[in-house]
Image (tube, rainbow, N blue to C red; front, side, top):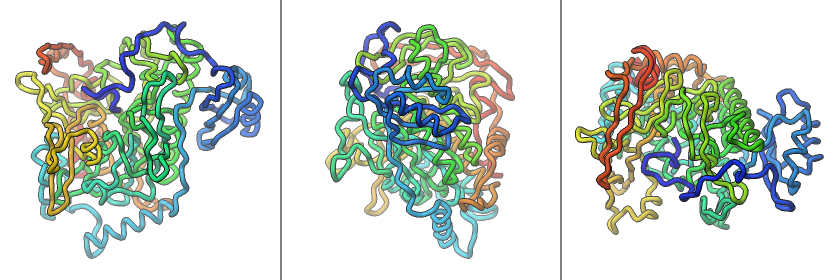
Length: 575
């Protein structure tokens, strides 16, 4: 999942004190202050009537997503929420966190795909389809392949799936994340710059004055709108590389090293992810013919969205209900248009099929004084998008194939599992960073974070450099269900490449998401619960303390809470 909950990563909030519901935010904005909201129209409502309701309540519509009936609205009316909710045309309202302008594509997605496919045919020669075919020699292993234990685990290697199928350039994989470094040498060959979009706007600070993304620095005019080919967090670049780093005798290879990556940025530099960008990216993915999307995050500010939790204020319940409904509409829209939806299961180490306690939400202050507070979370609450309909939820595994200590789970929740790393999956339960997963890392971030020596070599254990001739590229070790999900998404992309048919509307290939999901689960390696099913994790931390936790696996060898329908397998999927 997103950086804010990846193990050992810093959260976006400092140690804010927990507050009671009475101290939580009020329904409206401060009098006279401009506030921004996401307004969800009722399904089937008359568009003109809904617009009139917004205007009558004192709101100005900034933009609309007609595909799912969502509007971004600004207002200075402190009672806007109450006023607009009085209309029968309005379904829900939520504080907005970030909006972005989406420039029109200069070429149609079909034209872009055709150009990519033409280049691929030239590379293959004689019009041969992209990817290796049975009987063709296995490709040479990438220089850092021995460090990719995760790819060996799912047989996405030179002598495994890559010998038979490396993916089709006409298959588009959308990375909904913090951005993608499109100039990274081990991503650039497969990066679709023309279709990539940034749906976010940088947020310098929250309503409490705490820094979020920091100063707006996009050149040339210090804009808050970053280009669609940068990643100032590193999370999205790691994800994109895991899916589709090419076989180019440099660094690593992704699961599907010839598919095309489309950056659909929905995450802030800080690792926060909000509703409006997620909705816009999903509908855009459906409109341009994206085949698979990876979503390694949850929609902030609520890890779990509850519609009737007594710990929440009426305003918070309304906001959470709006998040669920608006996200599900966008998921449905994308799914109907051929997008296979893959998401991370989460890093809290919780069984999502059981009642639990969460004290991390809300994790963003949209009004002064807002801070996280403790809530009991019943199973009726949903973490979005991973618990949305049509979404394939992926749990994480370590090098020994045990469920990662941080990975959330649940029988009926986890659909499949994939390697995402576990730095404590070692003989002595001590930390070993190489038991995380290795993928691309923006050089600019390594420099900014002081992780390189003057000669360019890494000076920290979690960063690796590889060079080919005069070109050098950087890679970092990360662990999380955020890393497991893209490996499953990569296998899904291979399935579309192998079994898909011509997409008459957009070019490239397409395959029903239901068929892709069935093939992904059917080709997974069935893995039973540990024996005993109550598995105790022991971690000897670097500071000398020891932490233990016990997770209980429920289910059968066919499907269970740790592994879902099994461990994804790239070789089985393509053969």
